[in-house]
Image (tube, rainbow, N blue to C red; front, side, top):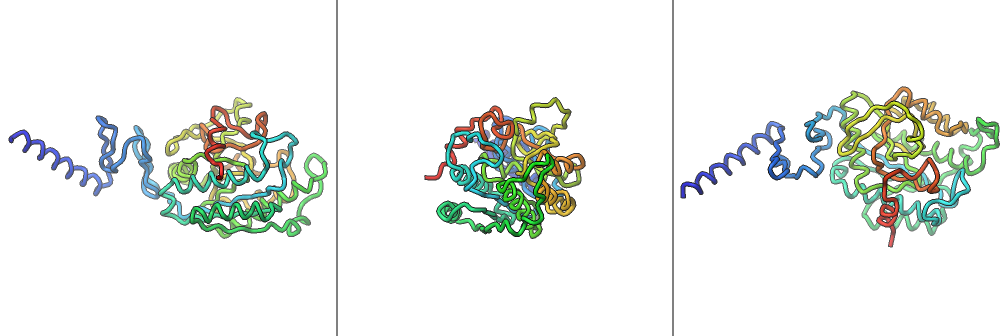
Length: 342
């Protein structure tokens, strides 16, 4: 009987200790069973609390001083154009619509997988050019099936054509497809003017991992709080980043390693503050075709922090030999199959 009493006393004291830790904001770790009793979680789960603290073991916690208020996810779609600047077929060799539908589905699944995103305002917007009513109905049904609201805008290229230089930096004629692409980017930037905080600009051929949005959002809060400033996040570990032996900085995100990069394509996440600060540079991509196209972005990254994950959180579905697409050391087929729409 005495042993049972001692066991009960220990359990009681343990419960009281856990409650006190919760009250004072401390976390305790039971290294015997790899649990965090103060959070009712296992060590392998996401231990961070959005807007409050970022926890990464064994380094401890980072107090969040840069809290995220909202997230606008802006897709740029055009299912009538197979490839913008290349003639080679994409990996899996499917119709363009299949990449777009699966890409959108992967982002929806990533959103639904992150409970913390339900605590902030998240808006989905699609800016489309010539995709056809059948394909657009598939997108609408995808959001409806998941009980999510989405705003669909029809791109008016004529609204921007006169602002686009007809010859590019290489003194070549700007193609009609490129003009529509530049117009779509311009419209997405205009839409971001109405955003309250973070904006994620996505092209329609990026397949995302299930944990992508969670990792990006929690990492943004963590690193922005550490540097006391805003930043850019790219979800893709592009293969061209391994072609040069550039020096970099390594950051510890929520559950991933991240490295500083000075180049991305036009899918990235940043804040409304950054959009306002670099409005002129960003709009210049929509009015003059630079070489490389993203040169104004790269110039911004010389002054501001931009990071990409290792390994990748999304894959850019281009040709398998393209240096701008398929990230290394990732099971591309698995991500592709997981996002098929029945």
